Length: 325
Ligand code: ATP
Image 1: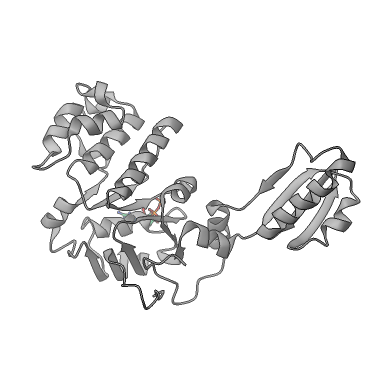
Image 2 (image 1 turned 120 degrees about the vertical axis):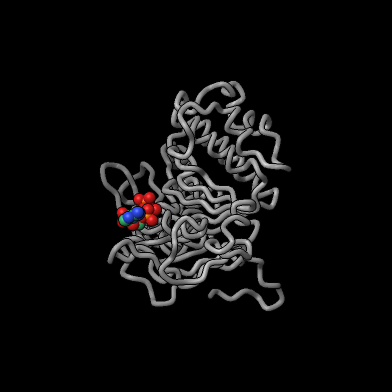
């Protein structure tokens, strides 16, 4: 377990998992998994297809019986305290969970319990206000997805579990949903996301947990994962081939090459500033800074790809605490 500074209290955990194991037949799909989700944070499970992410969150919701391991969700055991858990956890339904002819307005009335949020406000927020009389089967995939979100948030859950949150949504709806997750976090709700959308994980998550073959490969803030597994930067611009001799001597530069009039400089993050300063210094004689200057810095996707290609992790990979490394 990653340690946290002694002067800070240990963060309260909304979810703790220790040694979770789940097999289908003789195939182990979640293998001795440890996971901590600090209360009030947005945590993302990312990884390859078939890594065991959905199985893990299904175990957290009491939908699957683990073969081994300890799970606590908001202090409850998902199998033993299933009913109590349903009252405090909101999760996205599968599309088979709603009858085709159920209208949107009926669905929210059916699911709303005492103390629920205002359904009209939620329907408005997710662009479904005009759909109250539309039957479930008459909505587009994106609209159905937004209705699942409305239903997941309706009863003011303390923990929201979202699996493939924005699948099938157009870019505007996706931004809307992202803003809603950010708002949930501000309201103190804990969110656990399963996602393949790494831009989504980067935009929303305080922490991400990268999984492969049922195990945690690494965990931490998106920035920490990028720094650990995909550090570096590439600066590219039109320039004379001779420039590479000088560029190679700049701090942080690992490699400088020129081909077809394009200069490419690879190095650490600091190299960007040094290359930029060099370009500005020579701008008067070069007729300005190159208009086609681009800088590529690795993102969470690069980090995950490199992680997924890496050999098996050390036997004791880091688990999450509330302290971002
Ligand atoms: P994806 O990103 O593709 O959704 P995932 O990380 O969520 O994958 P899971 O859905 O948990 O992974 O599946 C883990 C493995 O278990 C996969 O190989 C999957 O085929 C298998 N699996 C999932 N559910 C069942 C089931 N009910 N019976 C048998 N095998 C299953």
